[in-house]
Length: 193
Image (tube, rainbow, N blue to C red; front, side, top):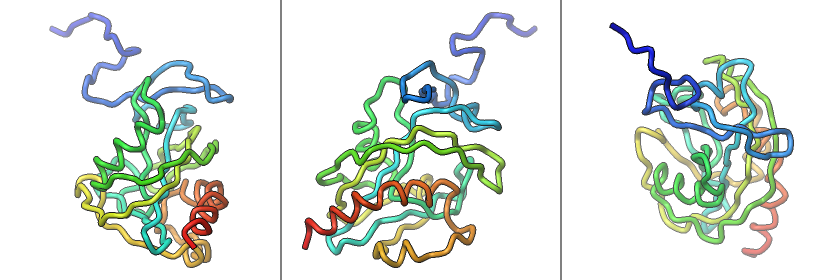
């Protein structure tokens, strides 16, 4: 016998699936949905965070996502990218996810604006349609990543990273968020000199 009782999560009955905030074209919360549902084609506009941390030498920390991730596994991306849980401030989510994924405490974490994009992961077919809050700062300690989240990490000079050709080794959203945050990263590098 199957239950006909309604679920309390917009018809979604897996209580373990994380929820994300849906937003309108101005970034205002309009509801919540399971994370995977937000990424299925054609994608639903939802809140996200992307963090870019520089090391003490001014190099950008990037990560190779764990191959076990539900999409974009094994691809390189920014220091950390994730989603706030519904009601969580993006800055708080950024600190939380940096601790969880990379085991680092950010220094001088600052919001660097936001960007909106709609890109598709060529391998999984999942869609990133995100209102993305951008953050920059420093990681002054060596990362100690969670292997379920991060397969590898590297510290790359910004000029080398900007010159890399998109060759399928980076996430679909990385070029967009890197372009949007580059002026703020340049300001951070200049402050360190």
